[in-house]
Every structure is written in structure tokens, then in C-alpha cells.
Image 1 (cartoon, rainbow, N blue to C red):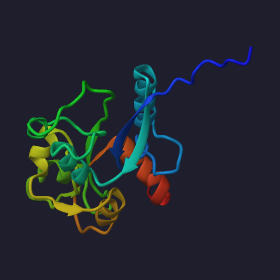
Image 2: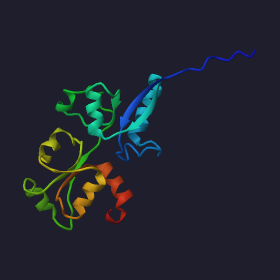
Image 3: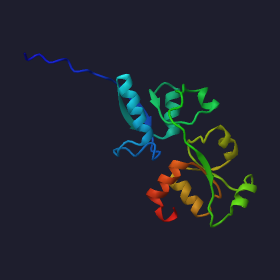
Length: 177
């Protein structure tokens, strides 16, 4: 009997993302922990996930205008939810505000929060509560650029997700760990 069962064809879904190690690794690398989660959800739903990379703020605007199918991951905010549909949370991450211990001590960083110069990464939300504090922060294109600005005392405070901070330090600034 030479008859073979027809191959099961999954529907392909395009997921737009950008590097956010260790959650989303660079294109061509092994998947990050959050990307693996999306892959597992795809398997459960019978969908093949096709990854494409674009800046987060651009991807969110394209999803909001129905020019992209989906983008991941984003912190939920009411402002974003007015423009796009969010899934239930798929994972949790802790964000912190970092400071350079060569320039400030813990008391200064905490007490002088409102007067210290803060940085942030373009297109990021750090969650509604932290976004209120970030306010008029200096904007940087990447975590590496923002962290370098913190090391060079161009900014005094930098919000970042704990896992991303650890991954960025390990990859680009291991001497600063």
C-alpha cells in the first residue's frame, strides 16, 4: 500500500517582535524564553509562527492600523489597549529603576528621584506605574545605548526589566556585572 496520509498543513501566523533578550533573542539565534512560549501556543493552536523583526513602536502602530497581524511582547497599558487587542498575560517580568553606584548612592537615587535625569528606551512602556515616573526621560534607541549613557553619567536613572538588564550586562558589559 503506497498511499500516504496527507500532510497536515498548519496555518502560518506572522509575529512581529524585536530583540529583548533573554525573552526575545536576535534573529537567527535560538528562541528566547518568551518566543518559545509563543511557539508552544502556536503548536497547541495548529499554527506555524513566522517571526519578523521591527522596532516595537513601529510594530504596535502597524498592528493598530491592521497592517500587521500581531506583535509581541508588550506591557499592558490602558493607552495601548485603546489601540490594540491584548491577550491575557503570558509571562511576568519585574522592572526596576537602576542607577550608577559610581555617581549616586541608594539614598540619593531614592530621595532625589524627581530631579534626577532619567533615560528610557524608545517605544518602551515599563508598565503604567513606572511610566508615570519616567515622564520626560531622555530617549535611547536600544538598551545598550541607554545603559552606556548611565555608565557615562549622561543620565542618572534608567528603568529596565530585570532579566533584560542582566542579559544586556552579560552580553555587552560583563565587566560591569
